[in-house]
Image 1 (cartoon, each protein chain N blue to C red):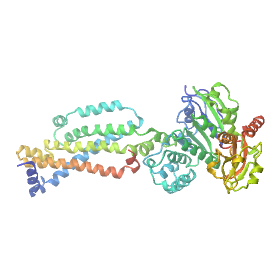
Image 2 (cartoon, rainbow over the protein chains, first blue to last red):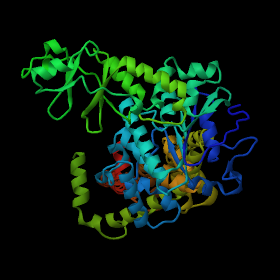
Image 3 (cartoon, one colour):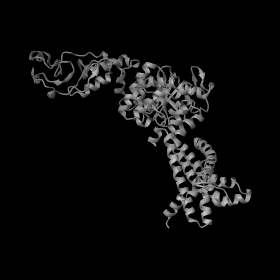
Image 4 (spheres, rainbow over the protein chains, first blue to last red):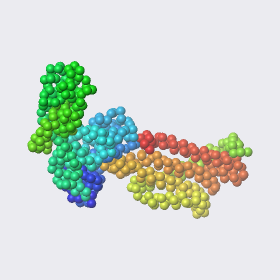
Length: 362
Length: 222
């Protein structure tokens, strides 16, 4: 049996991810929603109405469908691929093409690709076309079956970010199948972890999944570093940054001497625009002779506020000084923070449990 | 005298370009037999191949029919039919159709069956009816292979339609049969050259049809 007595309530206008090992019935579950597979027993309700009540093709046209490898029609140009469902619904060719052009923009495809054929596009671009095609008739529901598994990790991250952006604009009810738990945690508003035999192991928001896995199977499936990953759900805005250890490249000797202290073994040097250059010990920094080549690397800065505690901690771990660099949206330094301070912030956040409903990127 | 001399003599003789035994008339007759046989064979082979290929069933039965069709001797079938139904078009058409259906049927079935399943799944999931999936998703992608099947059937028909002359009908076979009977080898070689030329022309026609009918997206990725 592929799916056994599964009961799931999928919230409107949010992304619900079905995740689990291969053979757990997640794809079968998805394909039952648009009746590509008919359940042997049980019912599926859409807005309270049994999906069996309407003609199967009417049901399917009201749901966008995105599959692995995109499944584009190789004999049709990109714009005609996207126009497929509007054409099925009887739109005129011109109106369908106008709508397709609009969607190409929405999913980040250059309009010069409209007349191309699928073989002329990269895997990532093809998958964008697949998403645009699914959105073409503006369906309230979007079914996505491992849409990003066939592309390389860098492109996949781009597509995931793009999906979150599109979702924030359109607010569809998305059911997303993946075998990648990181993808599930990144995209899901709710995550359903399934186990072999089509049984539900846990159905919870991602932060709760990471905090309190229901059993050993879920814990094992989440992987070893779920504590670190959970930090993604705590925003970095609460971190108190220090500005004292930050000096500009043209700082004079008195200023450098004044900023160094026992608590602050290193100073962060910025360029005249406020962008980070690197760390140096106060005794090594000679006024007027500071060159970026001789400074210690500053790791990866985090955007204060919009990045998560995970990004801040990562920045501190990467830096040889143990301090993370906080920047604003434009990359200018707003302050620095030590591993100890981040550690305290993590303990506070855990104590408040603030990660359960706050979501931060990164 | 070598073959080139025969060819030169045959085509140089202006008498071969006029009248009921002239090249235009015989060529027209030949073309007529071939188009009729190909149309009938396609009318049988294409629908059956498309439908069985779409549903992916009946492959073994098709292979059996194709093998049986290929095993039937064309000339034997012609003689048998003449004995059964007498002279006329029917004894010529049946062997030609029996010859042409297997390549059309089997390649069409294989072409549709081997279409990448993921666009078909996507089309079905978008709510495309089965008939549209067959004609708008599978057929355009399978078209190059299907045309290949039609092409080999057509070439076989063009060269085999010469048998019509055996039972008193026209076509390019007339020159070969009459030439052999009259020991006029100029005529035999001329007729054979015309048949070979017609077969090459058939290939050219199918190449042109392929250029016109197959989507550039399929041509490049195939």
